[in-house]
Length: 422
Image 1 (cartoon, rainbow, N blue to C red):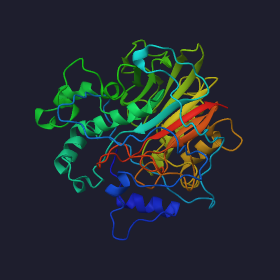
Image 2 (tube, rainbow, N blue to C red):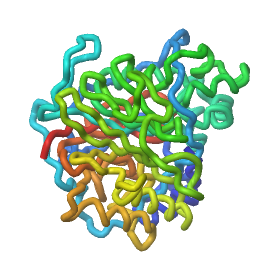
Image 3 (cartoon, one colour):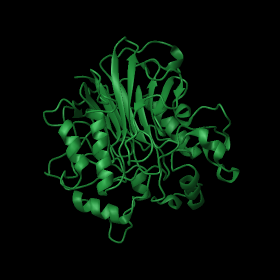
Image 4 (tube, rainbow, N blue to C red):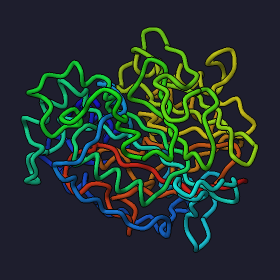
């Protein structure tokens, strides 16, 4: 992710009514990154009873993790902004889950049993990248100034630091998602080009050809992983007992295993991609993974607007969300309910297709009062659907939900939703 500059933070906070501490740089503090409590008990979309807390321990130095995707160096948030009302977060078509909390919609991979779609299943979106804009030297771990520079130069700031990888692995073992979308996750195939001096403490330290990717290490052999065309840092994974990705012909991993198309002058590769999930109950659903272009300049906004059009109008002659049942999830890099459409054209595009009387609704909390997922300020990571509703929480923000990692590393927080049929 690109560095979130003080100027950008101040501009976005001015739009949103947020404020930064006088004299601060505008970067999130370590406390913000590692578990700031945000009381969301009053929000319909927050499932405070969801998965058990999984505060993750750092990896031991002997752990092996090798990869998942070359990080996109551009992922700076551009969110925040003036709210049209003082009301709390808009829950859209969302229902509050029952007291039993999230239900793991399938048996664990080693049982080999078949998952039925059932009333509830778990979806997650997680931008696992880092940035040099955090106070990495403040927590006393081994990820300091030197490692920050190595991560930026050689790993594209994608998830690659071994202790952070182990923390996410522990977190996901507790959540047991049926579907997950990753953004900014390092691809281990690039380890061959990284010098030995830049490998200590990172996934490339122990990597050898043929090892699992970071995404596979995080999830284990019970998942199929497929990545965006031309964007190996953006991937979707599906629990094998829940379903399989039809575009991916390998049972375990496909580097370019989703439908997608590059938008000219909007960076390399596809930032929007579609996966058709053949469920083990014989039905199908469509997953659209999105990582919106970062930045607040006019060209950045135009790119995000075009990405929204790919989702709802045309990505390959058909809308990205072209199934009978669709789930859209990822890092939008804009807050569609807080940033005014007059400020950002992509906001107008999102609101044209999602919310209100449209068939697509936000499942995750949206608007003023929604739990922040980026930099402790902005709500830009979301789950959207035309067929499912449910409740969501943000680890490290939602009351009672521990942060994924105790140290300063991630600039985003995941969104975990337990959803079911409308």
